[in-house]
Amino acid sequence: MVQVKSETEGLLIAGKLFQSRLIVGTGKYANYKIMQEAHEASGAEIVTIAVRRVNLNDPTKESLLDYIDQKRYTLLPNTAGCYTAEEAIRTAHLAREAALSNLIKLEVIGDEKTLLPDNEALLEATKVLVKEGFIVMPYTTDDVVMAKKLQDAGAACIMPLAAPIGSGMGIQNRLNIELIKEAVKVPVIVDAGVGTASDAAIAMELGADGVLMNTAIAGAKDPVKMARAMKLAIEAGRLAYEAGRIPKKRYASASSPVEGIVR
Image (cartoon, rainbow, N blue to C red; front, side, top):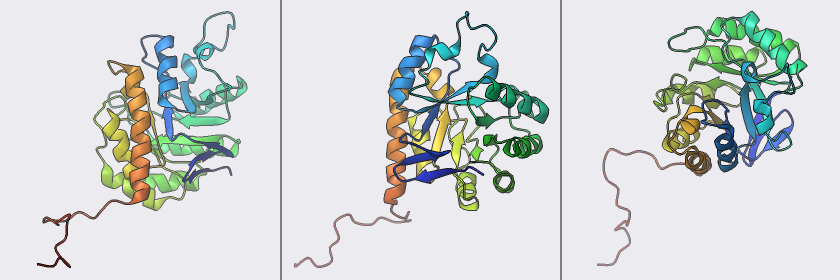
């Protein structure tokens, strides 16, 4: 079983070390040029793409892939828009047959309004795809028990949501993210709900190994500037986590102690 492992200097995925812990998407941009510029500014090395948005049938027509340098970026196909395990498995096969990648961000949506995952179907699809040799990165709820089940099923990492997809509400579940991080040995990559740079920094300060985002960058007034901000936030949050924050106290503590001062 191939696993994703977190290293201080970066993120090791399927034997390849990535310096960036930020994974970015490709949807909702005003145009492909802005998308390209945002990817550049983000410093990301992994780009996720919805298999259903990629033109795989007619190579003479414009495709999203025409705007992603595959020598520079590692593609992470995702099964966005799938509502059953069977549909997600079929979409993963399509991605592999099209030589996009053996990596798959697995999404099985259970509710049309909230776009929350169907965890039972997600677990079922994970088991099947792992047996078929895929490196599965499942998008799930912030459920500690499900995180452990996905790990046991062979998931390469756990990707819990911070808030509903595209909501921009930020990290709504700090405790659960921490509990998932404690409960599993595979990396935890926060996915969905990030709205601005401070959200990304918080996710990293909680111990997340990485963050995946799309709308927060693509939907910003200036996607390129926001992409740069997210890059810096991820780096700052990780450094703060590794440095170790001071404990919280109820009362003040003088920054210049008086002990030892001769009066």
